[in-house]
Length: 388
Image (tube, rainbow, N blue to C red):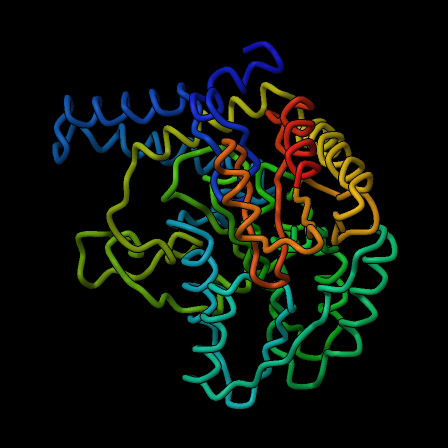
């Protein structure tokens, strides 16, 4: 596929101006066709016959190897999940907790992960503490320095886990995950590091961060423009060694038909049971399409050019205030319109087939620029906001 043609493969972009890649990316037509072709092959082979299992194994293993390259980890450290939440929570809840252990959670984490940590703390007698990062709105160097300083201040002898997203879903800042992991390694208890990568896979290079984290969960349906219902989590060797499966099914076992079987010795012990194999074919195709557009670094550079174009345009609007004081490091552009309720703005823009979203905390608007976003689309959004 010639570079730059991904947009033409997305029917969802033909009749709207779309800025919600951080919620769900449009599925390319060839990815949908790959899903359908996989369904057809399974039915032709027979959905539960001896002939179908090599196809199932080949399809899932091909994606596992492919994603492992994106994550920068060996394939045995990667487990499939339905979404980021299950990928993070299943190994998290299986770790060996002790009464009084402390969970240090950033104030920019998604409510789904926060709720899981809160319930874990309730059940295990753990305490919760906050790592403030929401106010970090400056340059990458300043942000990185402040994150590490604040982490040092917030760590205590009881800290057992740090939860920090790679690309913050609300402010759009990128966190220095590898540096955080390095700092945690010198702590007497070497706290585990859980990273929500919901906004990072397909948006920014993740190899260094994913390899450094203990739990790094991603989904394929956002910036990768794959089908919903399929994600992956990279686990450190020590998490695989120390954590016990929480939800258990035949895929957790090294010999699925043997009731005496032990769990897999690798990350697959956190996979559970039957899942939709054709989704693997769809995500595999979407990954190939993204790779045809350039390297991860080249794609990020394009995303940054688009987000900066939008960010600069918002500076020219006297009623707009961007959350970040500098151009975004990735494709999330969060902002406010003075005197306007964000939900009302979303509705009014939607009436013009311009789609972005509102956030509750902070209460603002968020637009996402992808490699498929055009300058004309950004100008259309800016003009619509000016008309308010």
